[in-house]
Image 1 (cartoon, rainbow, N blue to C red):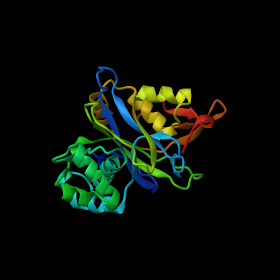
Image 2: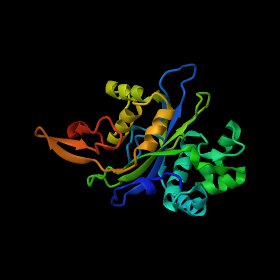
Image 3: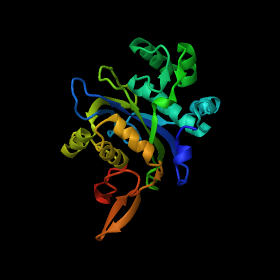
Length: 268
């Protein structure tokens, strides 16, 4: 059975809104530098993380669970994990126009047509059937799971993060004109630097994930660490240090920074 959150998560967490996202890597065009990742700026009108820079993704829908039940065994996954991976694939196509986690006759024209169909039917299964595509979930690797429970926030997401690699920079992306206002490629460190300058805003989980991603010189390095460290549910906790409240996370989950002064934290 393939590694998955169901197999690797060692902590249970209260129910949140199930969600999934893919951190998409690419090699910068004409450069041998650090890999870039795709980020999006959410519309300020969105209830969750409005105006924040995040990775493309969204909630797991009933149709994702239905398809997950059908295909889980074939992919060596539990139905719940399959549904999350399907949601990550669907949301990526919907929000960026990229057909990741899929195989078949896929090119720019067919991906664009599939994206338009997905916008109309809001489910991946009919798109797969119409285009003769198959799920290829081996393309995505479980990376992290975050459940930043906060009683002050009504909508709390329990989000599973995955990694995927485009390999080349010669791929066009475009916003969905609904939830997002801007898509951009950046190195992880570049995103952190932009946040320090005030050019973008980051919520606590996104900042911590970017710090972790900045450790890697390639997608292969990121994938290797993701496969080596069991995914555990990260539920940030407030603790007092030197008389001040800090928001902290697990110390052994692969993150180089495990705490931030609560007063500086953006939590969505």
